[in-house]
Length: 83
Image (cartoon, rainbow, N blue to C red; front, side, top):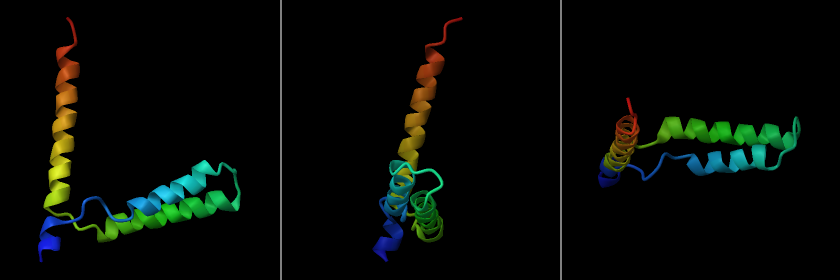
């Protein structure tokens, strides 16, 4: 019950996406099997992220912190504009 309430620390499938991205882009081999398999693994990770991520208090807190950070950056940018 507490795990469902708290949620995950990060979306599930994020590690799989990183591995797929590394295989596809890190092993730079255009139109080769590594590119295709890398993007397939990345897509699988993206699917897992959307399908099974438990959005709880932890991820909500991280999202709120990201919004605060973005707002702080935007207000800083606006305040540095000179007319």
